[in-house]
Image 1 (tube, rainbow, N blue to C red):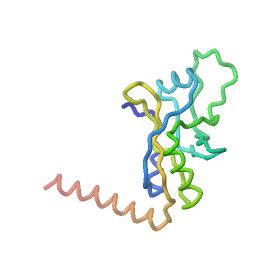
Image 2 (cartoon, one colour):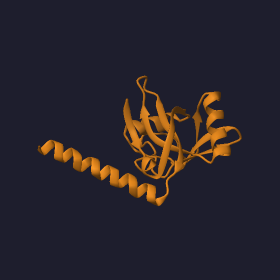
Image 3 (cartoon, one colour):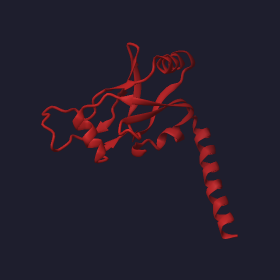
Image 4 (cartoon, rainbow, N blue to C red):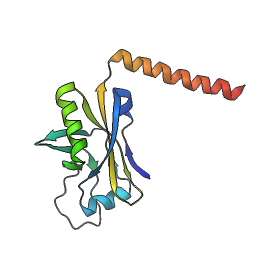
Length: 148
């Protein structure tokens, strides 16, 4: 598994309760560009339109050797999920107030591009401070164990 892009802010801004891997509908030149690690999902989000999930604002740089003239690097890309997972995610967003957050983009063992998405609820400011304190304490604890 080769990771292409990571969203480090996802775990900081959201309590992730469920992670699902989904496929993406991409063009050939986009896949070639992803092999060069020229993408970003920092500002990306997932939205539901007419019973389908779409990845929006995900930047994939134009492949230089491509013959395509008009490529929008931030176009909406369809997510490929099973009907069961799709209904679970859309139902949670509508009823329970969850958000679908892109976590990481990677190539699987077969060479296909996959996107890890998480079902999360937004953290409050005090939750973020608490998680930062816990993270700092774990780092200092590891340093103390290593030095002793």
